[in-house]
Image 1 (cartoon, rainbow, N blue to C red):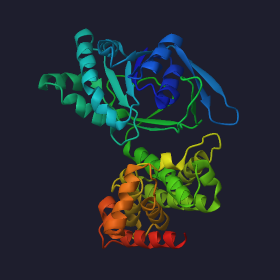
Image 2: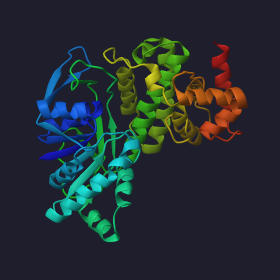
Image 3: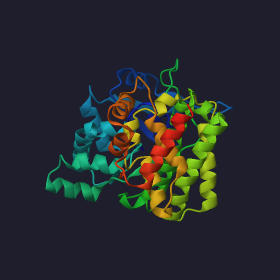
Image 4: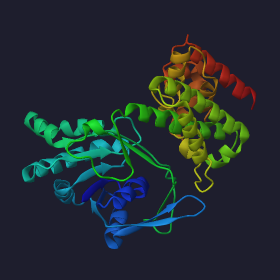
Length: 385
Protein backbone atom coordinates (compact mmCIF):
# COMPACT_ATOMS: atom_id res chain seq x y z
CA UNK A 1 0.00 0.00 0.00
CA UNK A 2 1.23 3.48 -0.89
CA UNK A 3 0.38 6.61 1.12
CA UNK A 4 1.22 10.08 -0.18
CA UNK A 5 1.64 12.51 2.69
CA UNK A 6 2.01 16.25 2.13
CA UNK A 7 4.24 17.73 4.83
CA UNK A 8 7.47 16.15 6.07
CA UNK A 9 7.64 18.33 9.18
CA UNK A 10 7.53 17.15 12.78
CA UNK A 11 3.77 16.42 12.77
CA UNK A 12 3.99 14.64 9.42
CA UNK A 13 6.88 12.42 10.46
CA UNK A 14 6.15 12.06 14.17
CA UNK A 15 2.39 11.52 14.00
CA UNK A 16 0.87 10.63 10.62
CA UNK A 17 3.92 8.98 9.06
CA UNK A 18 4.41 6.97 12.24
CA UNK A 19 0.87 5.53 12.10
CA UNK A 20 1.06 4.89 8.35
CA UNK A 21 4.25 2.84 8.78
CA UNK A 22 2.76 0.74 11.56
CA UNK A 23 -0.29 0.13 9.35
CA UNK A 24 1.84 -1.38 6.58
CA UNK A 25 2.04 1.57 4.18
CA UNK A 26 5.00 2.75 2.18
CA UNK A 27 4.94 6.50 2.80
CA UNK A 28 6.01 9.02 0.21
CA UNK A 29 6.39 12.45 1.83
CA UNK A 30 5.85 15.54 -0.32
CA UNK A 31 7.59 18.73 0.81
CA UNK A 32 9.58 21.74 -0.40
CA UNK A 33 12.31 21.44 2.26
CA UNK A 34 15.21 20.18 0.14
CA UNK A 35 17.33 19.10 3.12
CA UNK A 36 14.58 16.95 4.67
CA UNK A 37 13.54 15.48 1.32
CA UNK A 38 17.13 14.56 0.46
CA UNK A 39 17.73 13.00 3.90
CA UNK A 40 14.55 10.90 3.65
CA UNK A 41 15.63 9.63 0.23
CA UNK A 42 19.15 8.93 1.46
CA UNK A 43 18.20 7.06 4.66
CA UNK A 44 14.68 5.75 3.88
CA UNK A 45 14.02 5.76 7.63
CA UNK A 46 13.92 8.04 10.67
CA UNK A 47 13.54 7.84 14.46
CA UNK A 48 10.55 8.83 16.60
CA UNK A 49 11.20 9.23 20.35
CA UNK A 50 8.40 9.35 22.91
CA UNK A 51 8.53 12.28 25.33
CA UNK A 52 8.18 10.21 28.51
CA UNK A 53 10.51 8.68 31.14
CA UNK A 54 11.24 5.58 29.03
CA UNK A 55 12.29 7.72 26.01
CA UNK A 56 11.13 4.78 23.89
CA UNK A 57 12.45 4.98 20.34
CA UNK A 58 10.81 3.66 17.17
CA UNK A 59 12.45 3.49 13.74
CA UNK A 60 10.03 4.39 10.92
CA UNK A 61 11.05 2.64 7.70
CA UNK A 62 9.80 2.25 4.13
CA UNK A 63 9.76 6.00 3.48
CA UNK A 64 10.84 8.25 0.62
CA UNK A 65 10.14 11.82 -0.44
CA UNK A 66 9.47 14.12 -3.39
CA UNK A 67 10.36 17.79 -3.60
CA UNK A 68 7.13 19.24 -5.01
CA UNK A 69 8.81 22.51 -5.98
CA UNK A 70 11.42 20.76 -8.12
CA UNK A 71 9.50 17.67 -9.27
CA UNK A 72 5.74 18.34 -9.41
CA UNK A 73 5.28 15.73 -12.17
CA UNK A 74 6.56 13.05 -9.75
CA UNK A 75 3.91 14.09 -7.21
CA UNK A 76 1.19 13.82 -9.86
CA UNK A 77 2.43 10.35 -10.79
CA UNK A 78 2.54 9.26 -7.13
CA UNK A 79 -1.05 10.41 -6.47
CA UNK A 80 -2.19 8.48 -9.53
CA UNK A 81 -0.80 5.30 -7.93
CA UNK A 82 -1.66 5.99 -4.26
CA UNK A 83 -3.92 4.10 -1.87
CA UNK A 84 -4.31 7.09 0.47
CA UNK A 85 -3.45 10.81 0.45
CA UNK A 86 -2.98 12.77 3.69
CA UNK A 87 -1.71 16.22 4.64
CA UNK A 88 -0.16 17.97 7.64
CA UNK A 89 1.11 21.23 6.17
CA UNK A 90 -0.87 23.93 7.99
CA UNK A 91 -4.24 25.42 6.98
CA UNK A 92 -2.68 28.35 5.11
CA UNK A 93 -0.71 26.06 2.79
CA UNK A 94 -3.63 23.85 1.70
CA UNK A 95 -4.66 26.14 -1.21
CA UNK A 96 -1.13 25.92 -2.62
CA UNK A 97 -1.30 22.14 -3.13
CA UNK A 98 -4.83 22.10 -4.59
CA UNK A 99 -3.74 22.28 -8.25
CA UNK A 100 -1.13 19.57 -7.76
CA UNK A 101 -3.62 17.24 -6.07
CA UNK A 102 -6.22 17.95 -8.76
CA UNK A 103 -3.74 17.07 -11.51
CA UNK A 104 -2.80 13.86 -9.69
CA UNK A 105 -6.44 12.86 -9.36
CA UNK A 106 -7.08 13.63 -13.05
CA UNK A 107 -4.22 11.33 -14.02
CA UNK A 108 -5.58 8.67 -11.68
CA UNK A 109 -8.98 8.80 -13.42
CA UNK A 110 -7.25 7.95 -16.70
CA UNK A 111 -5.69 4.82 -15.20
CA UNK A 112 -8.09 3.25 -12.75
CA UNK A 113 -11.57 3.40 -11.29
CA UNK A 114 -10.23 2.43 -7.86
CA UNK A 115 -11.49 4.86 -5.17
CA UNK A 116 -9.11 7.11 -3.23
CA UNK A 117 -9.57 9.07 -0.01
CA UNK A 118 -7.86 12.36 0.74
CA UNK A 119 -7.65 13.34 4.44
CA UNK A 120 -6.30 16.68 5.67
CA UNK A 121 -4.86 16.30 9.17
CA UNK A 122 -4.75 19.96 10.13
CA UNK A 123 -5.43 21.91 13.30
CA UNK A 124 -8.61 23.41 11.90
CA UNK A 125 -12.30 22.64 11.60
CA UNK A 126 -13.19 21.27 8.15
CA UNK A 127 -9.64 21.04 6.81
CA UNK A 128 -10.41 18.40 4.18
CA UNK A 129 -13.58 20.23 3.10
CA UNK A 130 -11.48 23.37 2.64
CA UNK A 131 -8.92 21.49 0.53
CA UNK A 132 -11.73 19.92 -1.52
CA UNK A 133 -13.23 23.35 -2.14
CA UNK A 134 -9.89 24.63 -3.47
CA UNK A 135 -9.43 21.52 -5.64
CA UNK A 136 -12.94 21.80 -7.09
CA UNK A 137 -12.33 25.42 -8.07
CA UNK A 138 -10.00 24.05 -10.75
CA UNK A 139 -12.45 21.46 -12.15
CA UNK A 140 -15.00 21.40 -14.94
CA UNK A 141 -18.59 20.34 -14.20
CA UNK A 142 -17.89 16.91 -15.71
CA UNK A 143 -14.75 16.48 -13.63
CA UNK A 144 -16.61 17.40 -10.44
CA UNK A 145 -19.12 14.64 -11.14
CA UNK A 146 -16.30 12.13 -11.72
CA UNK A 147 -14.44 13.24 -8.60
CA UNK A 148 -17.60 12.95 -6.48
CA UNK A 149 -18.01 9.34 -7.56
CA UNK A 150 -14.40 8.24 -7.22
CA UNK A 151 -12.76 10.31 -4.47
CA UNK A 152 -13.58 10.75 -0.78
CA UNK A 153 -12.79 13.89 1.20
CA UNK A 154 -13.55 13.05 4.86
CA UNK A 155 -12.80 15.68 7.48
CA UNK A 156 -10.72 14.69 10.49
CA UNK A 157 -9.67 15.88 13.93
CA UNK A 158 -6.08 15.31 15.02
CA UNK A 159 -4.42 15.76 18.36
CA UNK A 160 -0.80 15.20 19.34
CA UNK A 161 1.64 17.63 20.94
CA UNK A 162 4.86 17.79 18.95
CA UNK A 163 6.97 20.57 20.47
CA UNK A 164 9.36 22.85 18.60
CA UNK A 165 12.71 21.08 18.61
CA UNK A 166 16.20 21.20 17.17
CA UNK A 167 17.88 17.80 16.99
CA UNK A 168 21.34 16.81 15.83
CA UNK A 169 19.67 14.11 13.76
CA UNK A 170 17.56 16.28 11.42
CA UNK A 171 15.01 13.53 10.81
CA UNK A 172 14.52 12.49 14.44
CA UNK A 173 11.36 13.85 16.05
CA UNK A 174 10.16 13.77 19.67
CA UNK A 175 6.42 13.40 20.30
CA UNK A 176 4.15 12.96 23.29
CA UNK A 177 2.78 9.42 23.85
CA UNK A 178 -0.87 10.53 23.52
CA UNK A 179 -2.50 10.90 20.11
CA UNK A 180 -5.98 11.00 18.61
CA UNK A 181 -7.01 10.86 14.94
CA UNK A 182 -10.76 10.89 14.35
CA UNK A 183 -12.18 10.64 10.79
CA UNK A 184 -15.78 11.01 9.64
CA UNK A 185 -16.84 7.73 8.07
CA UNK A 186 -19.83 8.85 5.91
CA UNK A 187 -17.58 10.80 3.49
CA UNK A 188 -15.28 7.83 2.84
CA UNK A 189 -15.48 6.48 -0.72
CA UNK A 190 -14.91 2.75 -1.03
CA UNK A 191 -13.36 0.85 1.86
CA UNK A 192 -12.10 2.62 4.98
CA UNK A 193 -8.32 3.14 4.85
CA UNK A 194 -6.84 0.45 7.14
CA UNK A 195 -4.82 2.82 9.32
CA UNK A 196 -4.18 1.65 12.89
CA UNK A 197 -4.94 4.57 15.20
CA UNK A 198 -7.80 6.14 13.23
CA UNK A 199 -11.17 6.24 15.00
CA UNK A 200 -14.01 6.39 12.47
CA UNK A 201 -17.15 8.22 13.61
CA UNK A 202 -20.52 9.02 12.03
CA UNK A 203 -20.46 12.66 13.16
CA UNK A 204 -17.20 14.55 13.58
CA UNK A 205 -18.31 17.91 15.01
CA UNK A 206 -18.70 16.71 18.64
CA UNK A 207 -15.13 15.37 18.61
CA UNK A 208 -13.76 18.50 16.95
CA UNK A 209 -15.39 20.74 19.57
CA UNK A 210 -14.35 18.43 22.41
CA UNK A 211 -10.73 18.68 21.25
CA UNK A 212 -10.81 22.40 20.39
CA UNK A 213 -12.51 23.48 23.61
CA UNK A 214 -10.47 21.22 25.88
CA UNK A 215 -6.99 20.79 24.38
CA UNK A 216 -6.71 24.07 22.46
CA UNK A 217 -8.56 26.10 25.08
CA UNK A 218 -6.51 24.65 27.93
CA UNK A 219 -3.21 25.00 26.09
CA UNK A 220 -3.87 28.66 25.25
CA UNK A 221 -4.96 29.47 28.80
CA UNK A 222 -1.87 27.78 30.26
CA UNK A 223 0.16 30.08 27.98
CA UNK A 224 -1.70 33.31 28.77
CA UNK A 225 -1.91 32.70 32.53
CA UNK A 226 1.70 31.49 32.46
CA UNK A 227 2.84 34.70 30.77
CA UNK A 228 0.80 36.82 33.18
CA UNK A 229 2.43 35.15 36.19
CA UNK A 230 5.93 35.29 34.69
CA UNK A 231 6.38 31.60 33.86
CA UNK A 232 8.33 30.67 30.72
CA UNK A 233 7.13 27.17 29.77
CA UNK A 234 3.81 25.31 29.74
CA UNK A 235 4.99 22.46 31.98
CA UNK A 236 6.30 24.94 34.57
CA UNK A 237 3.03 26.87 34.35
CA UNK A 238 1.15 23.71 35.24
CA UNK A 239 3.41 23.24 38.28
CA UNK A 240 2.03 26.53 39.60
CA UNK A 241 -1.03 25.66 41.68
CA UNK A 242 -2.83 28.93 40.94
CA UNK A 243 -2.40 28.58 37.16
CA UNK A 244 -3.36 24.90 37.22
CA UNK A 245 -6.55 25.70 39.15
CA UNK A 246 -7.45 28.46 36.66
CA UNK A 247 -6.94 26.15 33.67
CA UNK A 248 -8.88 23.29 35.30
CA UNK A 249 -11.68 25.69 36.20
CA UNK A 250 -11.98 26.83 32.58
CA UNK A 251 -11.96 23.27 31.24
CA UNK A 252 -14.72 22.29 33.66
CA UNK A 253 -16.77 25.19 32.32
CA UNK A 254 -16.19 24.24 28.69
CA UNK A 255 -16.79 20.61 29.65
CA UNK A 256 -20.14 21.44 31.23
CA UNK A 257 -21.63 22.74 27.99
CA UNK A 258 -19.95 20.03 25.88
CA UNK A 259 -21.53 17.29 28.01
CA UNK A 260 -24.90 19.04 27.81
CA UNK A 261 -24.68 19.77 24.06
CA UNK A 262 -23.41 16.38 22.85
CA UNK A 263 -24.54 14.04 25.63
CA UNK A 264 -20.98 13.01 26.46
CA UNK A 265 -20.63 10.84 29.54
CA UNK A 266 -19.76 13.21 32.41
CA UNK A 267 -17.37 10.80 34.12
CA UNK A 268 -15.57 9.99 30.85
CA UNK A 269 -15.24 13.68 30.00
CA UNK A 270 -13.76 14.41 33.44
CA UNK A 271 -11.16 11.71 32.77
CA UNK A 272 -10.47 13.34 29.40
CA UNK A 273 -9.86 16.70 31.12
CA UNK A 274 -7.50 15.04 33.62
CA UNK A 275 -5.59 13.41 30.76
CA UNK A 276 -5.24 16.75 28.98
CA UNK A 277 -3.97 18.47 32.14
CA UNK A 278 -1.45 15.64 32.52
CA UNK A 279 -0.26 16.20 28.95
CA UNK A 280 0.35 19.89 29.59
CA UNK A 281 2.34 18.94 32.71
CA UNK A 282 4.68 16.57 30.86
CA UNK A 283 8.21 17.55 31.96
CA UNK A 284 9.64 15.86 28.83
CA UNK A 285 7.92 18.43 26.59
CA UNK A 286 9.35 21.92 27.04
CA UNK A 287 7.09 24.34 25.20
CA UNK A 288 7.46 28.09 25.67
CA UNK A 289 4.34 30.02 26.63
CA UNK A 290 5.18 32.59 23.95
CA UNK A 291 4.99 29.89 21.25
CA UNK A 292 1.69 28.46 22.45
CA UNK A 293 0.18 31.90 23.07
CA UNK A 294 1.27 33.46 19.78
CA UNK A 295 -1.28 35.12 17.48
CA UNK A 296 -3.75 36.21 20.19
CA UNK A 297 -6.06 37.97 17.70
CA UNK A 298 -6.84 34.65 16.03
CA UNK A 299 -7.30 32.93 19.36
CA UNK A 300 -9.62 35.73 20.60
CA UNK A 301 -11.87 35.34 17.54
CA UNK A 302 -15.62 34.81 18.07
CA UNK A 303 -15.54 31.17 16.93
CA UNK A 304 -12.19 30.18 18.38
CA UNK A 305 -10.99 28.47 21.57
CA UNK A 306 -11.65 31.21 24.13
CA UNK A 307 -14.76 33.17 23.18
CA UNK A 308 -16.79 30.37 21.61
CA UNK A 309 -16.84 28.10 24.69
CA UNK A 310 -17.58 31.11 26.91
CA UNK A 311 -20.48 32.14 24.69
CA UNK A 312 -21.88 28.61 24.42
CA UNK A 313 -21.62 28.13 28.19
CA UNK A 314 -23.59 31.34 28.75
CA UNK A 315 -26.22 30.30 26.20
CA UNK A 316 -26.69 26.88 27.83
CA UNK A 317 -26.58 27.88 31.51
CA UNK A 318 -27.50 31.59 31.47
CA UNK A 319 -24.62 32.74 33.67
CA UNK A 320 -20.96 33.74 33.44
CA UNK A 321 -18.16 31.22 32.92
CA UNK A 322 -15.78 33.02 35.32
CA UNK A 323 -12.62 31.07 34.52
CA UNK A 324 -13.05 31.31 30.74
CA UNK A 325 -13.64 35.06 31.02
CA UNK A 326 -10.51 35.42 33.14
CA UNK A 327 -8.64 33.54 30.40
CA UNK A 328 -9.92 35.97 27.75
CA UNK A 329 -8.76 38.83 29.96
CA UNK A 330 -5.33 37.21 30.27
CA UNK A 331 -5.14 36.92 26.47
CA UNK A 332 -5.92 40.66 26.22
CA UNK A 333 -3.00 41.28 28.61
CA UNK A 334 -0.59 39.18 26.55
CA UNK A 335 2.15 41.69 25.74
CA UNK A 336 5.00 40.03 23.81
CA UNK A 337 7.19 42.37 21.79
CA UNK A 338 8.05 39.73 19.17
CA UNK A 339 4.39 38.92 18.48
CA UNK A 340 2.81 41.22 15.90
CA UNK A 341 -0.74 40.39 16.91
CA UNK A 342 0.01 40.93 20.60
CA UNK A 343 1.44 44.36 19.80
CA UNK A 344 -1.66 45.19 17.78
CA UNK A 345 -3.97 44.25 20.66
CA UNK A 346 -1.94 46.33 23.13
CA UNK A 347 -1.96 49.28 20.73
CA UNK A 348 -5.76 49.08 20.40
CA UNK A 349 -6.22 48.97 24.19
CA UNK A 350 -3.79 51.84 24.72
CA UNK A 351 -5.16 54.12 21.98
CA UNK A 352 -8.87 53.23 21.87
CA UNK A 353 -9.61 51.67 25.24
CA UNK A 354 -10.27 48.20 26.61
CA UNK A 355 -13.95 48.09 25.61
CA UNK A 356 -13.15 48.89 21.98
CA UNK A 357 -10.52 46.13 21.92
CA UNK A 358 -12.91 43.57 23.40
CA UNK A 359 -15.62 44.48 20.90
CA UNK A 360 -13.17 44.47 17.97
CA UNK A 361 -11.46 41.16 18.65
CA UNK A 362 -14.17 39.06 20.32
CA UNK A 363 -17.15 40.59 18.46
CA UNK A 364 -19.19 40.24 21.64
CA UNK A 365 -22.10 42.61 22.24
CA UNK A 366 -21.09 45.39 24.58
CA UNK A 367 -24.30 44.89 26.61
CA UNK A 368 -23.77 41.15 27.17
CA UNK A 369 -22.84 39.62 30.54
CA UNK A 370 -19.75 38.12 28.89
CA UNK A 371 -18.49 41.54 27.81
CA UNK A 372 -18.96 42.99 31.29
CA UNK A 373 -17.38 39.91 32.84
CA UNK A 374 -14.25 40.24 30.71
CA UNK A 375 -13.87 43.87 31.79
CA UNK A 376 -14.18 42.85 35.46
CA UNK A 377 -11.67 40.00 35.11
CA UNK A 378 -9.23 42.26 33.27
CA UNK A 379 -9.44 44.80 36.08
CA UNK A 380 -8.88 42.05 38.68
CA UNK A 381 -5.81 40.74 36.86
CA UNK A 382 -4.30 44.20 36.44
CA UNK A 383 -5.04 45.09 40.06
CA UNK A 384 -3.15 42.00 41.16
CA UNK A 385 0.01 43.02 39.32
